[in-house]
Amino acid sequence: MATYFAVILDEKRLAKLKGTGLEEKVTSMFGGAVKSLVIELSDELGKKVIEPFPKARFDARFFIEETPLAFRRAVFDKIVEMKSLGPEVIERVLAEDLERIKEEAAKEDMELPVPDVDISDVLELQKNPVQKPV
Image 1: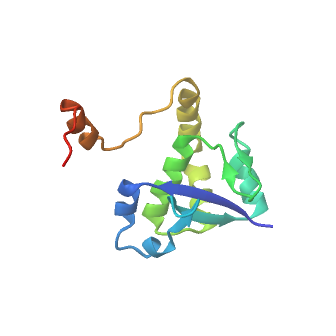
Image 2: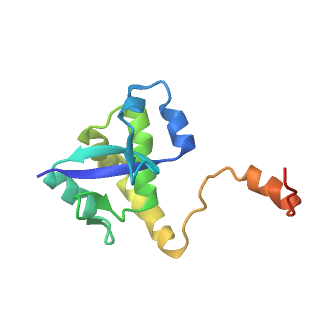
C-alpha cells in the first residue's frame, strides 16, 4: 500500500512553481482552502521518513504528518531543484540533509521558527486602527 507526503504551498511557494511542470500538479485540500504537492511513497520509504522523527506518524489517509518544519522545507527545496514529485526527492533529502534537519528539529522543540510571511498590509492597517466606512 502506498503512503503519501504533502507539502503545503503558500503564495511564495506557488510563485516558485510558476512556469514549471510542477504547477500543474498542485492539488487542493480541505475543500480548496489549502494548496499542496503530494508525493507518493512506498511503505518502506514512508517508514524511513517517520523513523528519525519521534513525533512523525501516518494519519488515517496514509499521509505522513508531524514531521519537523525543517524536513518539510528541505523537501520543498528538493522538489524545486529536481523538478520532480517522485520518491527520489525524499530519498535525496534523507541521504543529504538528515543530520542538518535533525539539528534544526531539535531547535523547533524549543521554539518554532518565525514564518516567512508578508504582513506589510496588516502593519499599514495598524497605523490607522479606526477604519471609516467607504
